[in-house]
Image (cartoon, rainbow, N blue to C red):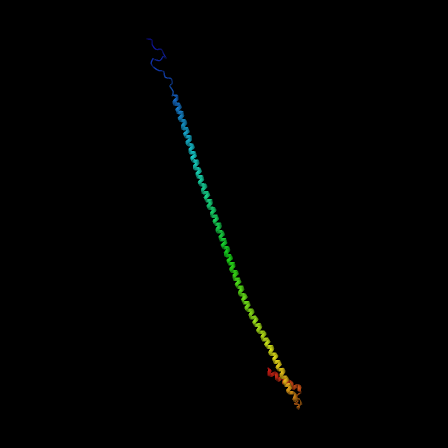
Length: 189
């Protein structure tokens, strides 16, 4: 038998084709890595979407709070304006009432003054009438006294006429009549 030469393969033994990993294993690892990367990307995207949704929700809540606050402020402002208008109206009504009361007082005072003036006018008129009546009565009395005195003088003169033929007593006829007139005047007085 001849000895085996160097580098020859003993009979019955297979020579290995490759000492590295198999191609199928490499492909599987690459696929796995790709899937993991995609999973990470999807997870990150989902997290971003969740954060964006949460932010949008918070923003919507804040906007709702702002809207409610603005509505409350507007409602409060309207209520305050209405209350102010009512207060102003009440103040104006009170002022009108005061003015009307003052006018009523003035009217009452004017009526009282007019009534007093009417009473005074009636008094003055009555006094004037009384004075006029008194003056008329005085004039009538004076006239009657004058008439009576004239009649008495005439009567005295008539009585004295027959005595003119009697002896003189030392007084003239004119002096006798004056004496008789003075006597009549003293009687009237």
